[in-house]
Structure formats: C-alpha cells, structure tokens
Image (cartoon, rainbow, N blue to C red; front, side, top):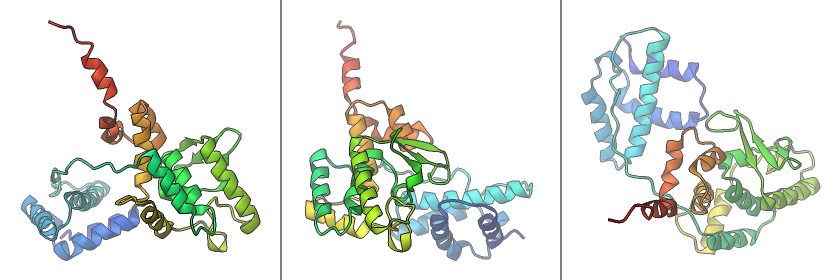
Length: 284
C-alpha cells in the first residue's frame, strides 16, 4: 500500500531544492486531505475535490496549481526511482490562471522611492539595495547574499553562480555607473563598520542581511507608492528595458529566465514594433 506520507517523505529526503520552504508550505496544505491515503487508490476526482476545497477557502488558482505541481513531482520522482508503473492522479490537472499583473513604477516614482529610503537611514543598505535592484534586475536573495569576491569592478560584472540563482544556472550581471557608485558607497561603509565581512550587504556578526522589507515598506509609504513589493523592482527593471525598445531575448538573459515564455509577460509593454509592422501593409 503506497501511502501519501511514504512518497512525500522519500521525495523530501532524496531531493534538494532551493524552494524548500515553499515545498514545506505545500506539504502542510496537502497533509490534512491526503494523509494515510493510498496513492494507488486516488482518482482525478479526488484531486479535483482537493482543488475545490482549497478554492472554497479563498486560495488563488496559482497557489493551488503550485501545490498540485509539488504533489505531482513527488509522485513522479518516487515512481521513476522505484520503476513503478501506475498512473499519476494529478497528471494534467491545472486550474486556469489569469494573466499576471505586472506592477512597476515610473522613473519619477523611483527617484521618490530612493529619496524616501535615505530618510532616517543609519546605513546605505536600503538606498543602495534599491539602486542595485532597479539597475540589475537581481532577485532580493541574490543581492542579500552577494559577496565582494563576486563583484568585478574592472570588468563591471557581478557573477552569480549556479548555487545563487533560482534557475541553478550561472549568470553574469552587468553593472552600469549607478550600480558602481552604489557599490563604492557600500564598500566605504563596510570598510569603516564591517571590515571583516565578505558580504556586500552586511548585517550583524558580519553575516549578510536577511531582509529589508520593513524599511522598504516605510520608504514606499513616504514616497506615496502603493501596492509595490521588493520583487516588483525586478519587474520594473524588465519593464523599463522593454519600453526602451530592448529585445525580449536580451531581457531574458539579464533576468536569468529559463525560458523566453516567462519573459513574454512584458511583451505588451512594447507596442511600437507592432505599430510599425502594420503600417508596412500595402494599401488597396
């Protein structure tokens, strides 16, 4: 009898993911519904019942899909590892998700946010973080854990190893003048306050900072910017590039997306090529 716990425990022990916390959250949601149940006895109707149960509690379609993908991955992994032949009951079940809303700010709002971040600041961390996020498109964790050894001022590149990126692929991030200035400011501050830390954004005990969320929210409030998260600075970086006419493929590489389909969410921000294209049509 192949029960739910056996498969999930095996998957958890035998695999390593950067999204362990998210996986644990998914598992905690699945447990009450599937604990002690045989995977071989589960039907697609059971899976849809779970999805409807979650939806009835106000959970978004995307969240349910994430939980089902995790469940499906665990089943497929166990089946492959043990060379078992049975149907995965979650296969092909996915809820329709609305088009994602891309939240980004204007350059004018970005200037207001930067100025607001300098108010009451005891260190250059938050203002510099905002500069780097808006000018590199890096994820917050990529910046939080950035080490000086991976910052090359001569080549103007930041190196993100496979262990640092979500896609587990090495990426080189170019630095513009604004980023260089911010990093030089941080280097000066670190030299005076955290001389033994290897991290760009150094917190207590010479470790890297864990979060800047509270300060960021305060800066947004002072700047009059609503409904804007730290991750939305990554969206802003991509949106600005696309609006300037940059190729989606260049934006893909800068963001480190694994597929161009992910980057295509920004395609609607660049309508000029489409307008030019239709004007090339012959008249009749």
